[in-house]
Image (cartoon, rainbow, N blue to C red; front, top):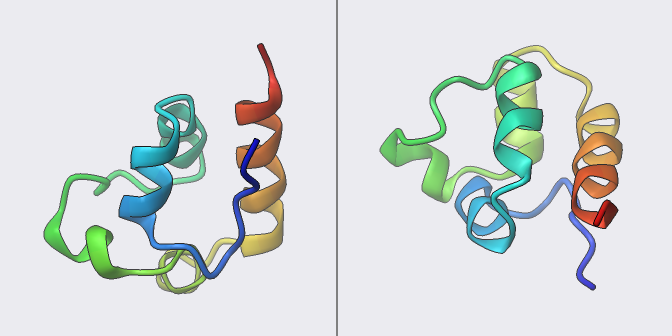
Length: 67
């Protein structure tokens, strides 16, 4: 199983596993479909939204590890 890192692109993460969508939405990232999200890293998006990237990475990896 792959692991999500904060240097991955949002688009890459979304393509990896759809279970990440609620995690990102709950974190305050409501523009998942916007064009910039496809070329923006998770860390960059977190910085823009003033969210702790490490916390989001932990939640995303937890979500994709659950069966």
